[in-house]
Image 1: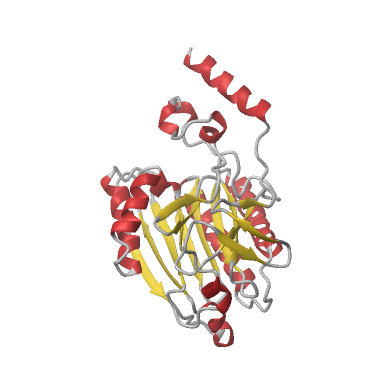
Image 2: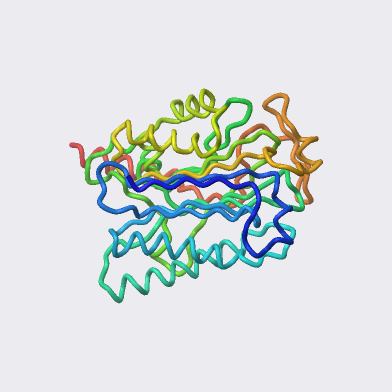
Length: 320
């Protein structure tokens, strides 16, 4: 198996002066080729010194998908390698993803590779306001948050299954399975969906490729995170990968875990924000409001109702 797991709570890069900004975050990663694929086209990024994490799931085979996910991760890493700003910004992530998309499309056109691209789900923590973070994504790679034992999906899949209103694409005709409606590599400007989420001491964030969530249901994932929560973070990540393979391992599977408040130097804002119930107060310049553990979509571009109805009608016609 092509497996890698690493844990860190302190950056080891040359950016020693910035490593304490996010020293309260402990992170790990695991990736596996699965049981059915010949190549691993997933790629992951952890930059704990910058508070930036990402999972990319490539499409188009070893010549296309593997490069697409690798170049997307490289673009993000380059964008945040010398991060000096104290406030997080979606613009830097958007520009990095756009740069990667242009490069991927040019490569695909030059090599006549059809369908080369990658999904992406990136998470950036705000050092100035440690009780918030941004998640940006395109495709069906996901972000979750485990808080007080309850797992919540923080992203909405950009997929035909989502438009059709079905929980899993196995309920779709074979020709429509695995079809996503947004990705990196098709256009110069990638329509990323940006979601602002609250952060509290004790939260566990999960970023994963669809090789995990299509094999492991949200209920089973919640059970694994709760029953195995006492494990060291790398072992917990590996347990998630093992569950995906146990269920069939039909695709590459990758996961990044970020535990909040597990390292030294927990910010006072997070200590004050430690949840005792499902309700958490988010304080930052844009808004000071109480929100339930649901996402606050900043620029979610959901398909119009008419489009969703049309997709469902087309699927019914196909079945008939």
